[in-house]
Length: 548
Ligand code: SF4
Image 1 (cartoon, rainbow, N blue to C red):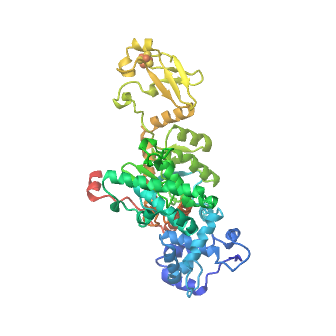
Image 2 (cartoon, protein in one colour; image 1 turned 90 degrees about the vertical axis):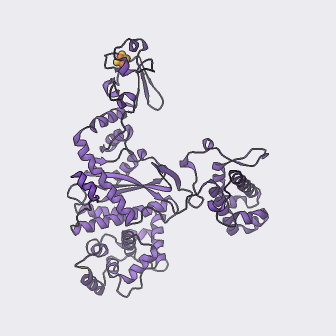
Image 3 (tube, rainbow, N blue to C red; image 1 turned 135 degrees about the horizontal axis):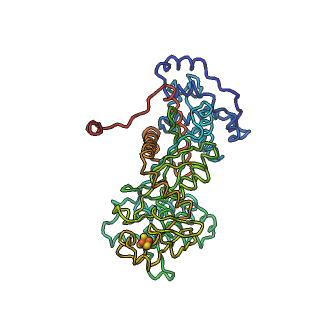
């Protein structure tokens, strides 16, 4: 496919005329996009994604409009094809003639692949944000807020027995396609019965002893197959197959085999297993991870959405970050700020929940990006604070330069030890604490003397300042705005299909999230243009009465 970029894309007059007749009074997102944002995507900007020779390709500007519209309504590629064939507002937004048969779903899918293969995932997102910023809809160094939500992988959740069984099946199927002769030699009679059907728990034995026996049999089959591959004349080619690599990884994470193979392979005990972040949850999406949050667990990914929340301006998504499901929110503020800084979109105030905040994220956001992170931090969990009496850390004066801490009774610390991670342990003299009248509210019954644990200075000071700040009314008033970000999460889930990815792998899932962000920004812009009031949180009548 080759591209001959068109300078401008003309909307056929009959399409324009009919669309205006039908949608002027009640405009749709596609209609508003055609009227207000038709010029933002141009062929020229995508020219590098296409070869210069071959059959003429569909205009990328048109395809860009299609994929954005597709995500505004959460449509599949086939449904998007149907929309470009049958809907006048879509034909208007994509500059197609009224009798155009529609853009084929394969072409839409291929365009997304081109974006991914050429590292152009962010192009549509950045182009739209640039336009919205030029229109004054994004305040420089304004206020933004971030929250995360879980994303289900396009695979079913497997228990351990299902996982090893399915991994073996996936490998046998791949070998059947790639090296049938090899498989014929390595094949064992019972494999057909064991791996002929998908592994569903309801079909597996219920008794523990039988399940254990089946697990061992599958483990032995997998090790035998890996050994046969290693001894094969086609070793290199077969070991390079993705399914064989996954089989090796899954067997390594799930089984222990004695070196002399005197006993069948055994499932690893929980304490012998790698952390969840390194474990494959399904052979059909090896990048998806199993994770849990509160009482909910899932296999897949996590996405962090950042949006603007300045007064009198539309809420617009400025960043999306897709991670493995196991990535802790506490590690995300730095990459989010880095990404915002690269696009010159850093806020001055960033509202986040306590999942994102710790001494490090608070301190480094200020130091490296000049961003004030406004979020609740975990309270001091010591018994003194819990009981509402006693001397907490804030009552001690720390002299970081001299490496001395002075307690509320005026005594100086007796030792200051900092380890490799930068954590400092401070001790006070046993003798002095023993004779101190404050001993019961400072040291307690069990300890012999008072100790303090300090993070590195910058983090410790940021944490203490945040603990003090969160007691103020001003903080509570500002922080209340954070909750609004849940509205955008809800919109992306309900309207754009964010909750479950239809794709396999992190890269494609992230592309989906970026395109959803573009779509949501188009929706938000449309609502802004038509003075659509912000949706209010629905409150049951009884709760409203109570609040009143
Ligand atoms: S118990 Fe020890 S550390 Fe605590 S106030 Fe008394 S002297 Fe200071």
